[in-house]
Image (cartoon, rainbow, N blue to C red):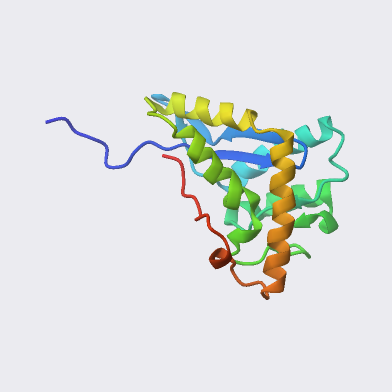
Amino acid sequence: MQPLPPHSQKVTVWCEFTVAFIVGSFFFEEIGPPGFVTCTVNGTRHESLLRNQLILALQQRGCADSTIFMQDGAPPHVATPVKQLLNLHFGNDRITSRHFPTAWPPRSPDFNPCDFWLWGYLKDVVYGGPIANLAELKNRITQHIHNITTETLQSVLKHAVLRFQLIGENGGQHIEHFLSKSKPTSFS
């Protein structure tokens, strides 16, 4: 007999995109005895990622002062250090998130282009063939993220606006029944 782990290995990946470029992929990992080990996202890790990756990338591209930042209301996204950092760099008027003046609607995956497009797209292309190990999985995710074109990002955000209008026309209700693609699940 050969013992097998009860769960498949997983990665937790973060990515942010605008109409013009993608920031990421970044993997939530810690160094453990066997090397890098996937870890959970918490407020401290999320704040560090935003500070050291996203905000730096926006500043390098000269668009930090004009970006409207949008994230769902997951607990790590609204931890006190995260809210303070976002407020410092974007101000209350350029943030859509829970606990801000423009609140992220509860239970609303229809609003998040990462949920309704990016993760499903990546799963389709990343799992196009067998994957030998986590290193290969991470390499494929990174490669396919970097291969997304500006034209694709523009199309996704144009369709996001149409989704927002559809949600508004339906009183903020979920709109899955109007759409043909199902919601993606996590990478494993």
